[in-house]
Length: 127
Length: 107
Image (tube, rainbow over all chains, first blue to last red; front, side, top):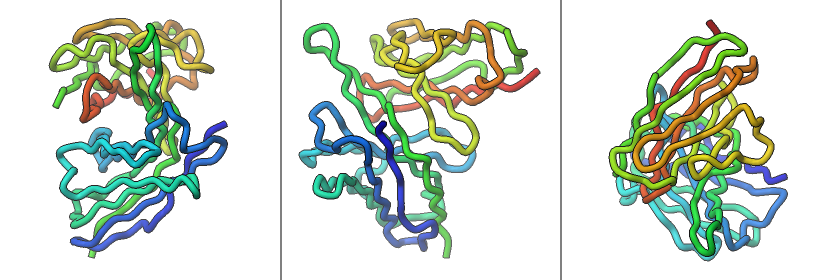
């Protein structure tokens, strides 16, 4: 069974870089139908997709965060990572990593959904 | 960005009740709509993908329907373990966006 686990500091100072890693076990991060994504939820707010990465390194980012975000993958460690720079208090949130699965149907059509999630990690931005 | 709305934002129901949650997209998304359940302190869990496909391992009391802009999640007979918050999410185009959630609690 696929398992994902987020790791990283729980406290980051304003203007610094938030860095998180997601370790994938029970499956390969290099499977061709899989993207790997980051989603967050700030206190009292909804879920926000940050971006996703393919094992080749190709990325999609949310335009609202694109200027500050880098998502990368390390296939040798079966991990992918999130860097969010110039953080402010508004970046305080629970951060989830998830498999962003491509589901193929009807001879070539596909859909994407997040089928496996980590437990989430609370990151607070505070001096 | 495609905006997702859900109604109601919360509801109270009893075990055995039929529960319906509605999700609306700000523009047509075909059937690219997924539903998730989240319990406090737990990771979200996918219930339905591509509007009406039941994820493996999810009880058959959960069902999804709709296409275009209007979608529905139905729980045919609410069980104690179903008290949670439910989110819809569109995967028609990036940025993927989620609805604000519907909290289902015990009447």
